[in-house]
Image (cartoon, rainbow, N blue to C red):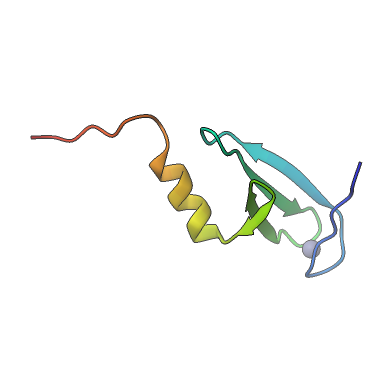
Length: 65
Ligand SMILES: [Zn+2]
């Protein structure tokens, strides 16, 4: 089991998986300084990209009109 260390303070990070269709997002959160990292499919992504991924999920978008 690999342990992730916070790039900011070197503290231990907890890993939380967020369901996102085919490619679950992984959020790592530092329990010491609350720094966060997001990754998808083993690659680091930035928070904006993560949020965009999440907002694109949830099945088909329904449009009015
Ligand atoms: Zn930290």
